[in-house]
Length: 112
Image (cartoon, rainbow, N blue to C red; front, side):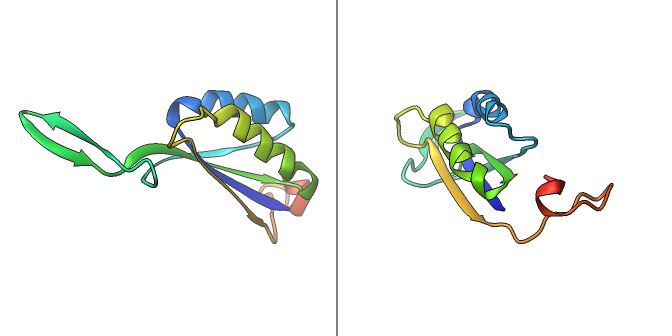
């Protein structure tokens, strides 16, 4: 099993959710986060004072999938979240040792 974690622009969330549903993903966890990378920040004016916004709002998605679904999920996220501009985000894929469905006790792929 794999855990696919993606950090995307907030306005792309619905597009990514729809793309993942088409690939057969059963569940997604989405968290509002802030971060910065190559996009850096920007300056804003508030009550006459200029200040730098270093951390920009992003959405972190976490999707647990079987090994054979991982590549399709990554492709779906790339296509749905991409704008071609800096700040589109990143995708990380890492091993998932175990999954347990709390209600039934199902394990691993059955729990997904």
